[in-house]
Length: 467
Image 1: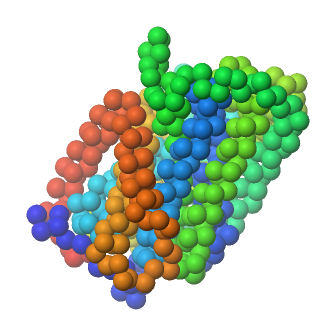
Image 2 (image 1 turned 90 degrees about the vertical axis):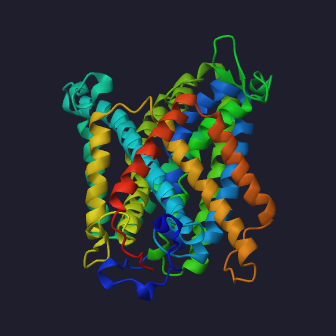
Image 3 (image 1 turned 45 degrees about the horizontal axis):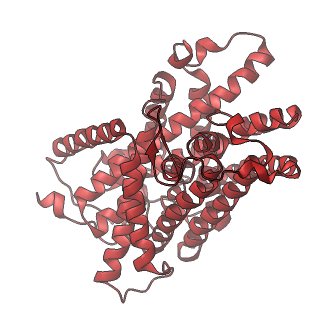
């Protein structure tokens, strides 16, 4: 029980042995690109159709609400990251402020979140890439697209994971620079979409603005609709900035750059999402692209812009790996922090001569490759939301606890209106968690029960955590 209550010492780079110390090579542009690369991905490319089916034109309001909740969480992350510039993000904050039991809960949940997101995006990338390969090679590709399409193993998904792994092993700064270039490609594609469809804007497409109301209500078909029902799903499109917090130890000037990266990437993405949603809904009646897995490309085809639609799809193939890279990066750093603290085998926390955590990167690649290559993820993808919502709540709680316990502590970045933004982040995330399907909540409970069983077995021997 002493293990459960103990807290990790306040982080200090000098206390970390050389073989477990990451190299600081990142600046704020790298961090902002990492955040934008993680946030702008499959969410805006697919969820605008799902959200429109649940809220109609009111999906714009759903984007604003989900973005506001995530923005409050982002402010909490920015304050905590500048206070504790160490690898691990929410896991590390929970370990220092609350204790080991909370750290394990958050770390175990983040392992679930990042593994599912990396695997799901890799499978999504495979869905875009396989038709291009089939067209170029002239052979059927279904056999290598996993069990969802009648195949055995999803080889393209495994391939992109291995490519990202190799890039991260080359070096953190090098992979961040490549990521920044791919983010530019992705943003350019969205700007082209806006430029093409905005001249076709028709205000009558926004009437009625709230066809299904504001509060989540079940329809005659049993499907829950409304602005808040859409917001609970659209939340998936916003998270990703938390991956920046895991890069704190590898940031050259964490006092300034972490806040710029977290808050800056979040503001950019909220603006992009709202503008893209307004342009899409104004150009075409929402019922014509609701529930489409590729709503933006469908809108362009419906408007007689097939060349722009193909270019958007090609840009997705080129740029979606930025999401894989960002979440893979965060996953490997969570594993690294937990191994360095002794909650996982310490041997995983060794770094290469270039200062990168090779062992945890390879370990992560093995796990997510198995998931992406073998398992169909459609029924369990919402579990990623559950783990994220828990982490966001814990970070906001840690910020409020420190504000109450140590108000005099110097803070390089202070969240504005902390006693408003903190509770909004906590209550908003709790509401979104309650809005998830009951089966998802059950699976999440089972996952954490397994986690505590693993913790109990492994923690029979307890080395003291390192700074």
